[in-house]
Amino acid sequence: MTRRCTAATTVPGPWRTSHRNRCLRCQAAAARTRGLERELRSLRHELVPAPPEVASAVMANLRSQDSLMPRRILQLRRLARQATAGIVTAATGVAVTVGLLKRRKRVLISS
Image 1 (cartoon, rainbow, N blue to C red):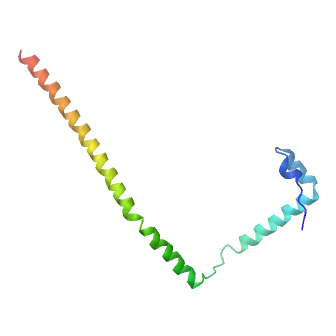
Image 2 (image 1 turned 45 degrees about the vertical axis):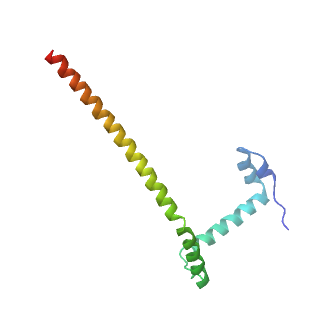
């Protein structure tokens, strides 16, 4: 079991950088991390075939999610109906107000 240098993780601020520059344990950990990152970058374009059982497990999970779709569709339809009703009500209110204002204007002009 390896010991970790707790000073670099417990003290906040710019002191960490100067600590890492002096602490051999932290420098070794940083070197290991950089080496691991370099190896992972070299594997970036490697393709690993998935086992056949993974595809069936994914498809089973997708089927279970499909059962939630009808409920979501119904909720979206209800929301669309409510929004349409609100827009129609607002448009009707605007049309009635404009009609009343024009009518009042005609009555005032003809008098």
